[in-house]
Image 1 (spheres, rainbow, N blue to C red):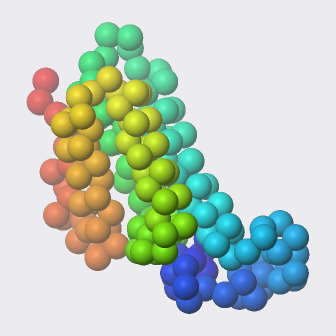
Image 2 (cartoon, rainbow, N blue to C red; image 1 turned 90 degrees about the horizontal axis):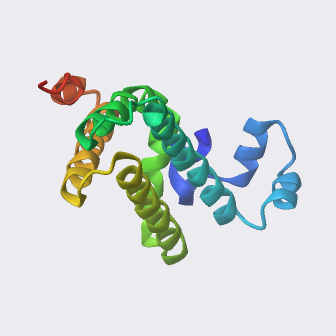
Length: 160
């Protein structure tokens, strides 16, 4: 993850990845047919972590919790998720690599699935989910750029 996060899909090398992992480069190819499949597996792991964190956030929510409260519960977990700089950079590198058609299709499916997951977990409208993701993208960018103060209003408690 760290190699892809720091250098991106194109510049990352499987030899450097193998060195970081303490394995031989041929072993990577025993596990993955090519660098692209390894990159997509890393992306899937990052997206899976987001999905699992959001699901856990609303698992204990009262059945009476409405969509706004459920979105807030999920959003409250996001600072923890993006606190993992390498996972966040890897997520952003996947969007950047989406110009490659095979990577782009896979990343688009993952993102669409994440949006649907949030909609299902929250029961929110498409507009509310879009606003939730817009806030998440703002948080992603401001975190990477070191501008957390721009995002502070996102983490405030919603009005009762």
